[in-house]
Image (cartoon, rainbow, N blue to C red; front, side):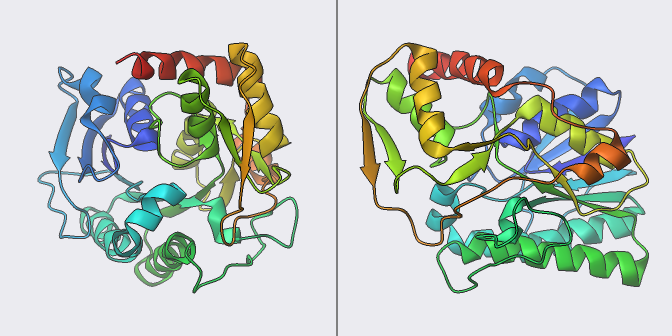
Amino acid sequence: MRAVVTGGAGFLGSHLCDRLLAEGHSVVALDNLITGSTDNIAHLGGNESFHFIKHDVTDHIYISGPVDMVLHFASPASPFDYLEHPIHTLKVGSLGTHKALGLAKEKKARFLLASTSEVYGDPLVHPQTEDYWGNVNPVGPRGVYDEAKRFAEAMTMAYRRYHNLDSKIVRIFNTYGPRMRLRDGRALPAFMSQVLENKSLTVFGDGSQTRSFCYVSDLIDGIYRLLMSDQSGPINIGNPDEVSILEVAKEVLAAVGSDNPIEFKELPVDDPKVRRPNIEKARELLEWEPKISRQDGLVQTLDYFKTKISK
């Protein structure tokens, strides 16, 4: 089949392109490169089944020829990025989703929306199940991302109900692995870049807030299973192995053999205190669960970051 991946030069989008190509599909990747990078897809340059178009998906999307699948992964996704680009984040979640859905409708293609655990906000239900409506501050600084994704889900469901579009929604929890940017503001790349540059590690608050980190290959496998299934979602894809941010910082130090100090700073506004997916739906409906341990994933990610630090 022929797939269009918006945000195809981003961290997750580029890995998704790899998986689609490995499964025998052809891929058209769209990206305006605000947070993505052609470095992430440089290895696909000679692949005749892959085509890259620099394009902002908040503008009309034109793709010649047939399209079987549209996967909407375009969006700033880290606090650093969506706080630096708040209006574009809202536009890509609203206008961009509308344009991507319009392409899928025009081509009679299957549509998959990359949503996020951030739709749950600072959750009052733990772990988070797909039927939880969330606890989001719409006027807080993180609201530009949270509400953009919540709107994108609503728009996707409207197209499903009104236009009978074959659509799917995946709610992605914290993911890490090669091709993350060193300074994108998320905890793991921040810790890794700091320790590799022999700096103190920055932990916000007292570090007791929790996250659940899923290695990128596990996440992409779950997304692909959803894409090829008859399920519509929303379905949580993430690793339920919950850990505190302070403990992750210590694990990164241990993985490098470093005794660099940990520096504590004020907790950002509306930073979620807990985050852990309930993945029973994914287990039952997709026969999916993560396989790579955090210890193994950290080593593989550190190896990647070492190559970036040395440049």
